[in-house]
Image (cartoon, rainbow, N blue to C red; front, side, top):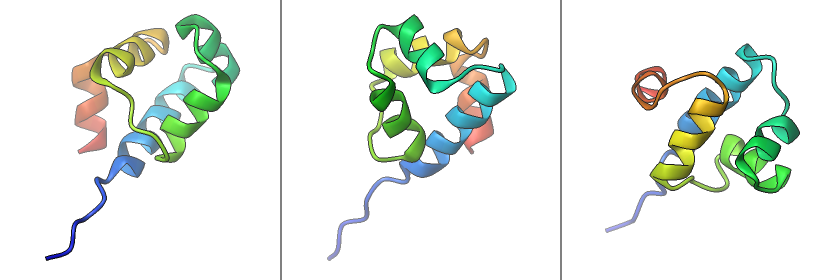
Length: 74
């Protein structure tokens, strides 16, 4: 039985779209979250999956909610 990698690219693409819609850069979001810009880029590219608290903070930083972010990713 093969294991599938979780599909984090859809979530990452949604995160990126929400950030762009908010007119923010990865560096701008990173500064608000007090993380490195590469962390934000990794989440958005699907290379890393943010923990739920980090996802919530990210979405609030771009003016969205966890519910909205998950609905857009579905």
